[in-house]
Length: 75
Image (cartoon, rainbow, N blue to C red):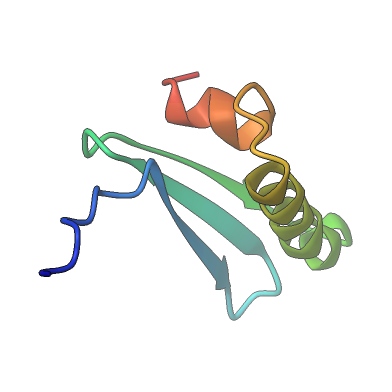
C-alpha cells in the first residue's frame, strides 16, 4: 500500500538570531502569505523559547484557536 499523500503544513516557522542580538520569527501560511516579528533588546533572548513553547503546547493539545492557530487563519 503506498503512503498517504502528505498535506502541506498549516504554518512554516523560521526563527532567526541576528548578529546584532535581535531575534525574529517569520511565519509562512499554507497559502504562501507571511507575517513576521523582530524583537530587539533583552526580550530577544526570551521570545524564541516562548514562541516554541506555544507551538509545542498548541500542537500536542491540538489547540486551533491559540496564537499559532490564529496566525494560520490569517490574523
